[in-house]
Image 1 (cartoon, rainbow, N blue to C red):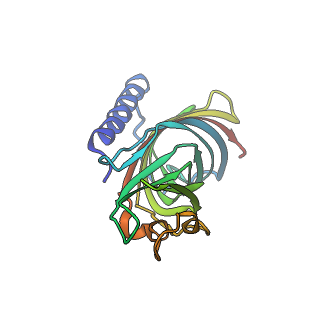
Image 2: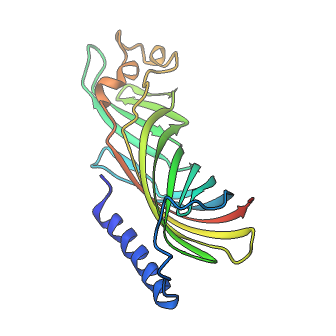
Length: 252
């Protein structure tokens, strides 16, 4: 579930901006949210940059705080509802640790799995809470897929260390965002977006991509690197908070 403190901050910021906007420009009677009221078709493209927090779960799992950037394509379909496609990339590194028991002549060891980047593609809805001629305050739920890429596995025992690349892991991700879009010009705008991502474990295939076990002095049949799934199990659910500032190009 989305962290209570993070969600509370999202709602407090949104409520504060909405209250300020309403105080400065009281809403007309006919300006109530109506998702069914049709608006002119609109298309926007956005590029953004920001940061993503790390999420550490116990002693075994850790993800670092890093920068992030990406792009959004948004289509307005109703008066206060838009649909969008979002791609986000980060060089956020994630590590997961496990120990292996002694097996035959091979002593107890230590497994370290590392992912060196994060890719997320998601479809998001955008519901306008307050709309003004040059500003929009919104909430935005969405879902998609997260991928941990450039992964490798390091197996360490008193006999030595061996490393091998492993395939990337994928997981379903859900997100909830809130923010403001400001249009100082007709076809160019700015967006400040706060978003919380909750992703499943996404362990994926942890098998070594070849040859790693042969280097282990030699190891017994069924090298730990090739049986990592039994030691790691399922990677914990991950919760990451993202803040971005984007430049919007209104195509139509």
